[in-house]
Length: 290
Length: 331
Image (cartoon, rainbow over all chains, first blue to last red; front, side, top):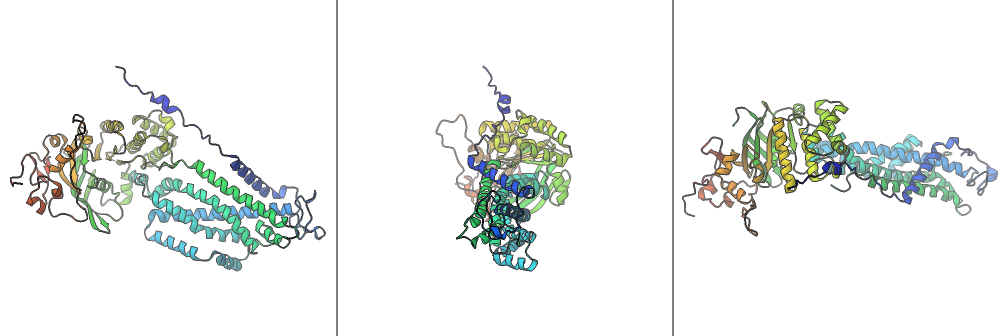
């Protein structure tokens, strides 16, 4: 009788097909917009655009023209260059603040989820206090105390983001640390540090990164709101939020002054959300197989 | 038995505090495993098998209280400090868990998981660790091991995953391997392959092994000695051959009767053990199997039988009315 010979080697060698998923035009449009926004923000000083703070009282609220592509604002400053320089502030604050939340909140969440016990309770309690504090009042108080600057704004927005990141990290860690692979790692002689960094962190980082992109979007909006309220970056530095606030005064004569920065912000926030969602779906090797 | 035991578990008791009271998961268990020997631990779900394996590895939940001694290679694991214990685990003591779906980290590649274990314990450089990983995967019967290194656990089948888990457990040449229901999550043909693989690697590496299972069929022919557990206690313990030839404990008999037989007629009703194991938070005064035992008499409900020797010292059982010596009291 013929023996059943499985030609396993040949079958197994065939690598899983490369991820040929269609990403969709929306994803690529979002990527293009993000690259464009970052590029002009980074190379703003090299672009042939007028000084964003240079006023020209004779050309106030000028319409679109060859010299001022997007016209001028209420003080005769070039709208395009203010938008571009405003992108620098919005993106800088929008990226750096959630970074603080991601690192500090992520670390605290991992530790409190893994060790539980008294330290864990203390961390969760401290975060609850921070959450219970009205954020706007806290921002007001801190800005009033330490002064209005990009650094202070980034820092306070970052601190306010910590509890949310901590909760995401802790929730994921709590479920994961009961999984057998953590016990298996311990049974193989892994130290606490190794289990945290090599076993748990790679699992926790995925939802955290998805949350980070969402955080960027939210922070850009929050920074806009604060600037709109006059609590953001000090003038004459422009940010999208403060531009909308300034445009509000001439909403009836030149609505574009408020709408242009609003559109820029809308597109950027939407792009971050879209890319965040797609990236999470693509990079997650678990594929719901847990 | 062997002259010098590699592992000896002496009077181990594991208590778990629960909202409903103290749960005695393992009740005064004593076992020995010699170097190169295989011990099978058999019992139904919830009888303390897994807790016993966790107690040996010192991986009990934080709240659990452990008393007794676990002597491994001349050291008492219970009183060993954390750092020494950590060095011992993985290096000399290894485990294979029940479910290969959850015992591998889902977001790290097979290669990463193997290489890191090797680097941690054997202090190999990356190239050497990779080379050894490939050898290990080949040894556990994984085709095209080089390619497998870059794959994630979800890209492998259950049997393959269990092979990887075994490869990781074997990576540092442990002296004792604890296989906690290694085949429960796999289908029958793969079960046999995995058990054969474990037996082969055991012989080759001359390591001791504890196979924990609820299937007497798994331990038959693959173990040197079998311990039958019920409600946290060892109720019968014997060399495998002696156990199957003349078992003494009614529970062992009932377990054996509950294995489906290939030659029985279709639609034969499988003799199940009626009732359920006793509530571990409310210990019985008598023999814990007495409520379900068909030989039970008044004394069984009132007194706990101790492990006593049968015809050889290696064969021990805890029963007042062992089989072949039926109760004289009329039913």
